[in-house]
Image 1 (cartoon, helix red, strand yellow):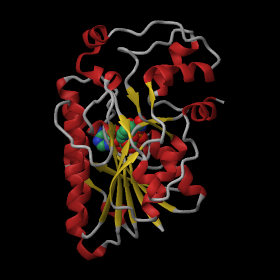
Image 2 (tube, helix red, strand yellow):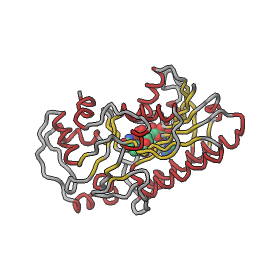
Image 3 (cartoon, protein in one colour):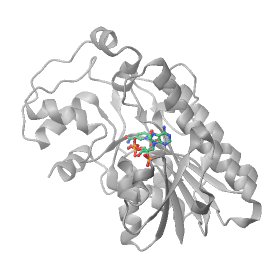
Image 4 (tube, protein in one colour):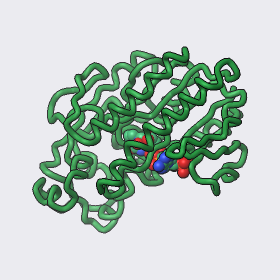
Length: 303
Ligand SMILES: NC(=O)c1ccc[n+]([C@@H]2O[C@H](COP(=O)([O-])OP(=O)(O)OC[C@H]3O[C@@H](n4cnc5c(N)ncnc54)[C@H](OP(=O)(O)O)[C@@H]3O)[C@@H](O)[C@H]2O)c1
């Protein structure tokens, strides 16, 4: 079996590649950075530049499945030009994969693609449980980005390639992601929640994330799937469990909404939006979480 991974050098990709190499699966990866081509020992790197419509077509040689993770980070400042990059990096890369396979016709072996997506596709809601059937809107920038990204992915169906979209929640890992910026104030005993702290945080441990991608590839999942643990928590709970796991106090009152909006503007959605997302569909598929509860997940990450 051979997989092609885009965004392999990122938070999820790094762990995914490691896991595949341990299992002796052949890995090709596409990178937008030429200096990373030879960086992953045991995997074969290829250069692409989605905004310039360039791709090294050798990346598809003997590939059975694609895992699509690439996209500009959403945690950098949302200036007008950077917002365009967040969107275009996902659309252009998806289009380029699709057009390449379409042009290769029968000279490729790709049977399925599993792509990252995000729970940011759901409108913020303080109470309702969001399932894969929840009606989406285009109110916030994140909703627009994820909807357009998912729409672009549907094109693979016309090539008879199965497509699964994993709508990721907050991925918890030692190496950064959402915990990166939360760990520093926690270390100094300065943790705080944002707004009223009651917003739902749907999270998933990195090990479960990696296993869900590999299972989706192997079992050829099709459709949309929420990639979140079965037990979302309020933001206050997430931060208090983090401080507990770090053996630090949780002392500060929450920072009011208006202040956050004043400081980070539209990006405030990333910390103020509420998502209580259901994992029922993946569990019904037979997926078993190693880390269903936040305390054990954080303990394992911070130990
Ligand atoms: N981590 C989370 O909590 C989370 C939650 C929801 C959704 N997601 C989505 O899941 C995907 C993977 O997440 P991640 O946390 O692993 O992301 P990440 O660490 O930011 O890595 C994404 C990778 O995308 C590539 N990339 C960066 N800028 C790009 C651009 N302008 N055009 C094309 N490729 C670019 C980079 O790889 P190269 O330099 O090698 O090209 C980078 O390593 C992302 O699309 C992310 O939005 C993540």
